[in-house]
Image (cartoon, rainbow, N blue to C red; front, side, top):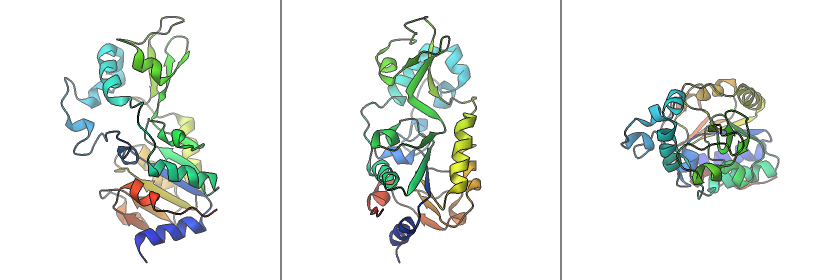
Amino acid sequence: MTPLEQLQNWIDESDNIVFFGGAGVSTESGIPDFRSVDGLYHQSYDYPPETILSHTFFMEKPEEFYRFYRAKMLCPDAKPNPAHQKLAELERASKLKAVVTQNIDSLHQKAGSQTVYELHGSTARNYCMKCHRFYDEAFIAQSEGIPRCTVCGGMVKPDVVLYEEGLDQETVEAAVLAINRADMLIVGGTSLTVYPAAGLLRYYPGGKLVLINRDATPYDRQADLVIHDPIGQVLGAIQVHP
């Protein structure tokens, strides 16, 4: 039996699947991966991306932060790929119960997924730091310099988790609960080196842990099935049987 056939069989016999994904899920939609060879971290800027995307830098140099953020973090034209679409299809078939993602691009929701736990927030949500008024991604993209609230003039901040900031506790707890209850956990497009997000895998009780990633990960030896191929290619080949 091939790895793909094994994956298909497990999906067919499972009805409480959880998917945990990272940047590799979105690279096939044209969104750059931070840590791959051609990712953002290997390009040159006045400051390292890790510095720019920190809470301290945002507060001290917001205009410089937004110059980078608009150019590199907003991808309004990106479309869901076969991985996003298949996961949404599995949810509609009542087989997939939740998507837990490290991505901030909202492509899972654009594909139709309903239950999505965004560990690192989303570029689609932005809030005034003074009055908490909501602004969408287009507002940030079309603004110049430091985006300001149209009501109170406060600085608008993306609802994304910057370096030095903690994850939203409610989101983490919901993701942990979903993973703990799963009868199958599919992990895809992530190097599993970013914590605390990668640590959520330990809450899976085990049985059908599938890792789908282009490169090897620290969890490969613990997985029940490992497939080193692009996530969109693998999930795109899966048939959904309600």
